[in-house]
Length: 206
Image (cartoon, rainbow, N blue to C red; front, side, top):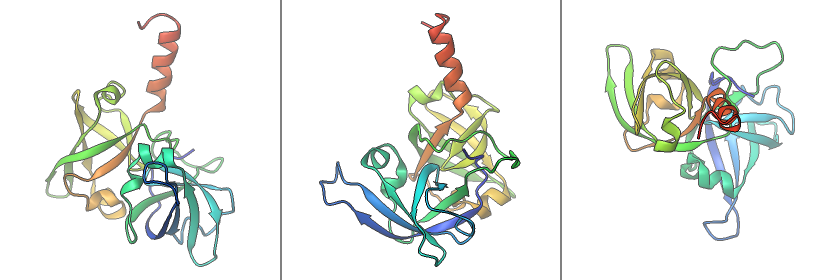
């Protein structure tokens, strides 16, 4: 479990694609992230731009390796990564750790697209498009994880939502440089999904 507070921007050092066709291929990522591997062990979870990945190798040079299954590549923006791509990194929350963001599982619900960004004096307002079936889980002033970053929703429509990025977010995450058209991983608030499920099971929602 994560909180959406990015600890460092890592860099993809290599990508090994599977031997199968492009629709079924898996991948192995080698990511440089000196901070997140400083106390990592094999089998640990690291959130890579919103996707929970398992550490499979620790070469000892400030990098870690992780396997990415075809399903993950199909359902996330990790498929867009190339060598030298920057990625947001966060270690799993330790017991007793501070909750600076919100509950983030690292399970991507969908891929959004940056529609526009409007720079302010010290911040950027960003509009992100999303599928209508995800929009119902997004609420104004609620939380959403965008590429692993816990953000507060400023407004929402049936096809998009807005966020405002403070200077720290612009400097310390990949959202500081993404241009309109870039794809981002989205994870809606898990509490909204469980609430809908409970109400549906109780017959409140039809």
